[in-house]
Length: 263
Image (cartoon, rainbow, N blue to C red; front, side, top):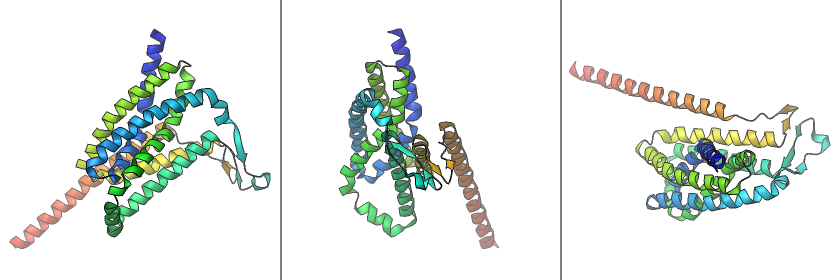
């Protein structure tokens, strides 16, 4: 029992570390829903995803070999250009990464186009169901690695299931914190979207690695979590420095205008 409890604590910590990018996606995706429904969408989406994660855990425990078996590969005649052997795991991770990159770029484009942004705002009310659906689906995509890591640490089902439930409850609480922070500091929305873009790249490289994908003879190397957090740190620092420098320029401009008026 003591060993199981220690494993449970490690799994909860692992879920928390691996779940940061998922948390960011949920916070940004929920903004597409009507404002009075955003909290409900986050809570219900994560709550339903907890049960689906447990179902996914049960499936993976019993059918892990099926997900790791090669489903298809590129013809031998294409080896000079592209080579890969795709299984269920790699396809899910690749699809999730591509979708996240698309979502991040679409939202960045909307921010740059006022008319398109306003059109998106008008469609928010009708997007509640789709937002909830995407939160659940992407939650499952993000949970794949954490579940596989849990299976590698223990074979006790209740320990893995308990870690999923506890981490899900923590995610519901933290999602509110992250969402409220982004709502009060809207200037960080752009930073969040570019972080989400990097998350998509990380998933694509991981999926490519799982599929042993090679482009023109060069193997795809997965982006590590260490690299991801380092990039995140640099992006935050650059954003802070840029913000303070912009404020300094505005103050200097106001000072110059005041001196001109005084003269």
